[in-house]
Image (cartoon, rainbow, N blue to C red):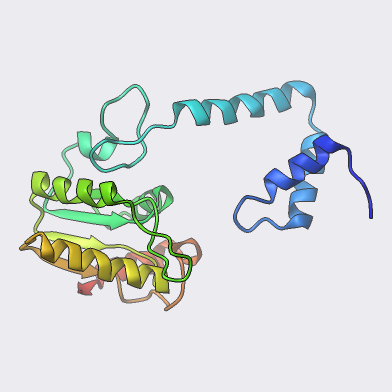
Length: 202
């Protein structure tokens, strides 16, 4: 077996942590990075450092925001407050924005329930959601979650939590065009747009 220098082995190991990156791809990327000059690598390192230190979340909806601001662009704008779209992750927010079918507010859970692994949504995040709903008083809550076991479990959990909190509006979920078992990561924008437009009461 080929033994890499320790710095190369470490680089490959870190790259493998990225979703969808196996050993061969990580190895290929690592060798590509090794071909960069010192200034380029330092610039990349600075980008990573800035991401780690500047990363900031909105205190109301937990969407990404500029660290210098108190709210995200969605909460500080005049977007429609009658609809609230609940998503699992930050990337889902920007994916939906690219589809241009939603003009309301967002709320990011940060994770999905996973019956298989025991992963749960932090109670404080659920409590913050209920408070945000009280502030907004939306007429409709859209559960824009993956059509997977985890997405289904999360949708059911949220529905029970919201009904228990006496939410009187409607709760809907994306349906049309989303294949069962598929994550948003593998859905094109036009399919997601149709799924959003064809959502049904949950």
